[in-house]
Image 1: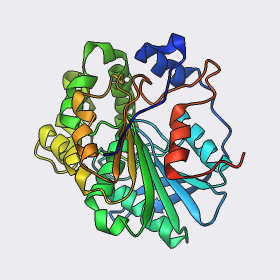
Image 2: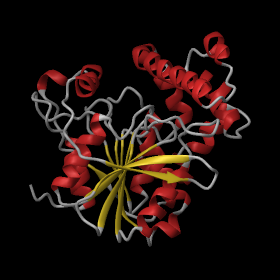
Image 3: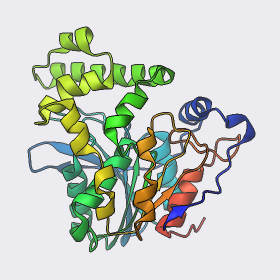
Image 4: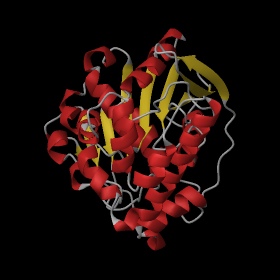
Length: 323
């Protein structure tokens, strides 16, 4: 019955989840990570960019960022640093259109595009890595869990362990949650970033995108998914996209030790994103629910140098720090 009692305790003044989230995203310093970039060509003619930080030719952690994040997001950089300090290699893969270069195809990434993660895993195996671990944050956390479930039998031979953090495993209800008034500033930022990306693709790739429709109709992420994400990716509507891309219904199919670390005060997550019953009925799927922690934050002190996320990733993946 792997529902884990969390021992995370927030710094006293960081009880408010919004303050906690913003301080971590804005004020936490970026560590210096020396990446080596590689472009991975995909079967459909598109590409994704991989940023490598190699320490060990045998063990590798593959990291997936969240919505409108990248390999340069602070939570990714801090995690790469912690993994490297344990003497293990890391590769942070940038989802389509998130590396700084616009991707070739009309569509970008989405929460259920597990074939791109599969391509990264296959590439890592071809390079000779024999022990591979997965870590995903937010959207990347749901995508990672979905990949683990969809390719469960194959993954038993390829992946050692996995961790998902602040993952919206039920997109149907999480969509309503993120559009609540308290999350308005985050939503505005996401939509602004998507609009800029659409404009860049229209100008640089000469792909027709009706950006005027964005100004007229797009007020929420649901609007964005209804008018762009769903039709661009072959879904009949946004509701079918959410249903298909949610990992929650498939968690019981996961066949390797996996941790979902979702703070109870994460303002992006709905009640359905805390799958207690699924964890209680599994020997492999673990759920940890700290009382606090915000979204991809979980800071441990006021110096903002350390996060509980990095510590738990190393512990659960059984990677022992060397420095």
